[in-house]
Length: 553
Image 1 (cartoon, rainbow, N blue to C red):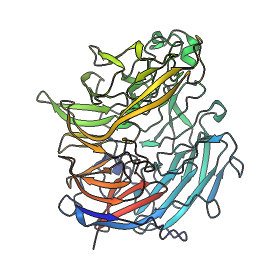
Image 2 (image 1 turned 30 degrees about the vertical axis):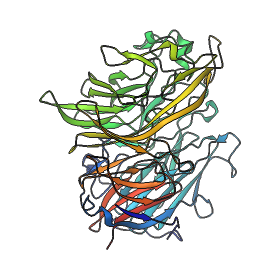
Image 3 (image 1 turned 180 degrees about the vertical axis):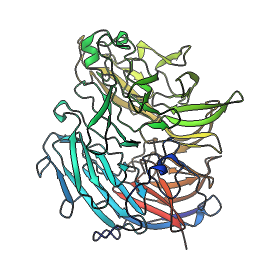
Image 4 (image 1 turned 90 degrees about the vertical axis):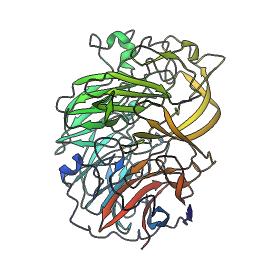
């Protein structure tokens, strides 16, 4: 294995330049194809597989992979295009500032578009030179991260921490309009990457500090008006309301759809995972399964009507969500071709469903230390153990609230039949801090007490068994959580990190490292890849910088 270490020196971001290539217009047919000469949407295509058919960079020559450029994100407003309704200095209500690049950049016609909270950039994919920078003056909200932008024609879309849906001109970065989608005063905050499907822009809200209900909206690309809204918790008398004790609990329901989903164009169904129920860690005011929280849901894109749901964690009291990527697989089960959906859930279970109807096919446990359930029911759902809910003296639970997996996207390689995911084996003690019949906020506190190790795992989609597992470092200061965004390619490569600040190319059949580059900080969201001028590039964000690699020439 050839070792390459690069100094974190920002280059080329000296002055804006003119747009390169053919211009910024996105051909909508690219969204329906595996990504090759573009990366036009969050996952590269609608499937969520994060698999590329490119093979110029492959297992034989990856040792020659070299740094093409680094762009260090400039968050200064001095040269930026400024928008937003907030003051020049962020208000005290704006918290959790983290300007690490947690987005997957889009690449269209030689231009990369990516984001961080309150910021969007366009840079030249060949050189890393900045084309434009947009800065949003915030009115508040939690600035924990931003997953990226969506693109329709020559328009970009992104969400702000203070819950505005913003559209920009992709060529200039100038704002077209902005629309408020939720109130920051109710402590909603938004991190999602918009997903463009036809003439719908799908966006979801986040936030659970004040026990507010979640929803997902479809908006039109021209003016940003609401086309439909799907509520993640039912209203009294609606289907699903029987899983809540009363109207009070439903209206505090939660279920935020805070991550991008996936889409099957043949079925016209959008698959999205919902977040935890509220109050987050105390369940005494919400007896029951609490639909549609912690569920994988299929929605008709035209109408917003729910086609089916599958609840991964009934009555969640540990903040696990089901927002992790629902990966679409066209596979074979019992000798028959099937349209499948797979998810390695934050709760420690792996689920395989029929995505045409939501029928359960398989549930397995991918986390060895899992101790919160009493097994699974006939529908493959975990059976929560009430003894593992928060208590006044404290309750030991694995995994912790960060989960066995988390938001960074997995990758599925159809050649190997393996789903790759970063995992953690953590323990926490959960203390009930609000024993009131109607607790407020989170209702309990968590104290982490240990981690038996992080690992990169390969799960066989047909059996749910872990085919291989590679331990990861937990280097202090490198952001050493097990969860990581991944990319697999037809070049027999799997790109991720090692938990110790290195960007790594693994053998997807064994987990053996084939190459790495020292970045000094772990990657978070998934790498992406594209062909440009006959060269394949691998692009990934780490910390406040974007790194591009290509074969040495």
